[in-house]
Length: 201
Image 1 (cartoon, helix red, strand yellow):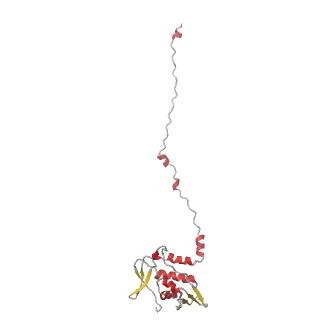
Image 2: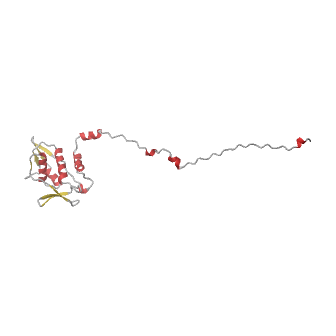
Image 3: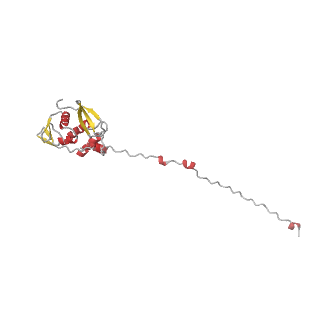
C-alpha cells in the first residue's frame, strides 16, 4: 500500500450558523396606559327645544293646575301632612251684568282658618271695588270676574297671611295680641307679626 492510502483522513470542521434568540416582549401596565382613554369622552346631548315650554305657557291653566300653583309659588311640599291643604273649586255665578257671587266663599275661609271678613277686605282691596257677604255665605262682588282672577288673589292672600314665614307650613292661625296681628304656626310654634287691614281702615 502507498503512504497516501495509509494517511488518516482529516475531518473538515462544519460551520454552524448562530441563531439569534428573540426576546419575548412582556405586556406591561405602562403599555396599556399609553392607549387613549375613551371612557373620558363625553357626548354632548341635544339641547332641549324651547317650543315645548312656550306651548305650555300659552295654554290656559286647569283648576288642578291652579291649585298646584298655590303650593309651587309658596314653596310648599304637598307630601307633608303639616303643610297640606285642600281647597274646593271656586264657584262663581253672575248676578246681572256688573256683579258676581262667590258662592262657596265662606267654605274656603273655613278651610284656611281665616274669618270671611279678613279675606273679604283683602279681595276688595285687590279689586278696588265694593262687595258684601249675604246670609247664605255668598260673597257678592261688584265687578266682572272670572274664577281664575279670584284664584290668583287667593294665592296672594295665602302667601301673605296663611303661610308660615319660618317653615312654610299652612297649618297656622291668625291671632291678635295687644292690637297686633300675628301668624301663629301650629307646626313650628313660631309667631310672626302681619299687618291686616280691617274694613274701617
